[in-house]
Length: 431
Image (cartoon, rainbow, N blue to C red; front, side, top):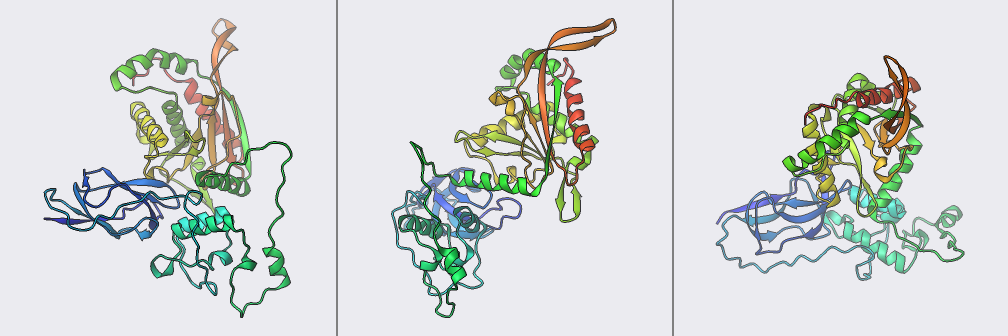
């Protein structure tokens, strides 16, 4: 019998640990290679972890709710399927949210914990729920070295909602008397009243994260938006001519998105300053062209998978990549590194019937482009024998950029270049 250890994998750049959300297998279960074994949460994404070896789950080393560092063993797998498992099965129970879990009494400390490490996931939850560091320091942790785990903070939140309390009500060290100012800060805000009927909807974790990032982006970047109307008649006619044969050959649809991304990548080559970020008083111009494409989830939330090195793909490669990422985004199957590393983003607001908009920049990027709905309109066409009016397929593009480092000339020229590439799209393009 050969026993191999299953290690906590690297979950994306700058991610050093994750929280075990749920074991999808129990001890004694057979596991196929690449079959999902557990769900893990980081400060970036919740995702399933597949097995790198086929066999039988021999032992679970880390329980649900515990935080584990990248590279640490989380389970042991027997690669001999004929082996008899004598260990007592450890049944994995579904991870519960703060609203679903039974109310548990969470212990608080006699004095604030000092120099205690908090995982990014715990800090994010605390930030989203309005838990100050002084309050967080009073929660007793059940993790390694008395760390506060995700399970601890969710249980504390549930208890706090059931029995509202302020920092002033928590046990504090007798050597740290409260001042009048501290007491004033601790007083609960007055209840908000509603006139008439209203539905109160609790934001989920992703919606809170989106809200915070959007507010941060508007605070960090002075947004300017440029609008350009583009004649995409050739693109529309090409897709109508190509879509049926492409669907029959590839088994998937051809959309406008890969053509949009191709035009963006080409324009970034022409204007590389668009592909940058700001760090203090320095401008970091990125060499890799990694285009994020905003996608709406069935829940109504937004996620932005990234096509790394988008300029290295041909149109067929982009089409397959776009479809793959979009499909896996809807089923929560994206990997952490597919959601990170973006250098420029696009949003297809035309899919909702919108003609133009003012997209918000994805930090730390400095620009984003939105593509509006394609509509038939009368337009003036220049011909060798004079101008004529014809029905054309027209679309607005909306380019938002960070005015700290991108002036109107650069922001406008980039948007115009994307429009030029789309208007010059060849009807006989092969995919």
